[in-house]
Image (cartoon, rainbow, N blue to C red; front, side, top):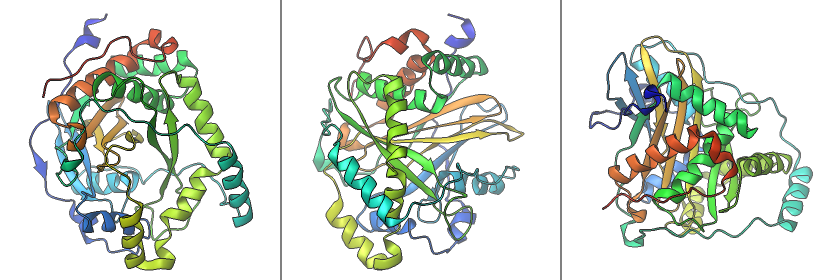
Length: 356
């Protein structure tokens, strides 16, 4: 392997800045944000984390902000502006028109007739009694330009986009570190609806998602097909309707819905976030980590900044989450993502667990 690919990546440091003032000051009416207010009311962290690699610094500067007023794509420009960087506006998604209620109902009925595999997560460590404990601060990894290009090349060899490839390899890394290989994992795959929905402003929550099911023998091409099928079934629009129930039931109604709809700790694998590509002079890298939750205990994120990709990871204590295991997860994710040979493998060839 090229020596540049073997260099030790930059990992986590303890410096965390206060919440971003620009987001803290925003008080726009955000129906999606009501769900994060309900989470906070029930003791579940609602903070997003952003890591900025400034100049030649080996360790990132972490900043946090609430998900109640923005999603990651909307918050990042405000985070950058507060640090004195010039960044573009939040990127728009693909232009779509929300289907009418009849179309959404037919899509729901058709999807129900072809049920997805049942969730069946087998964690190596699981303790539901830790559901009220906060997750550790995220761990970040900044890749070299050569590693970044290697990931793009591996994705192209697999016949999928880089974002699909990284979702698939994140699932492989999950099975190599904190979950058993035979799990049926549920992941939230984000969908940016900016440009297709009305919202208070571009920074407000405007992301929906697809609910992927990944099996031990799922391939990267299978993930691509599943994403396409779920788009065709309008799943992202049906989830958007649910996310906006606060328009009709208010915060009290959302609080009740959240209380009775919470899944058991460890039910799902987690969430995957991709903030896309950013060109920000003065930065070496950007990455992120979603809040996560006991039910969605693995929060992983990635972004491309000035030609360098970076990864972020946060693990909840209910699955034995700590910084050491998060570092091992990121190392596995990096190695699997750069390997063209892994395309033909449904399951990682080895399992590595970090001692508690």
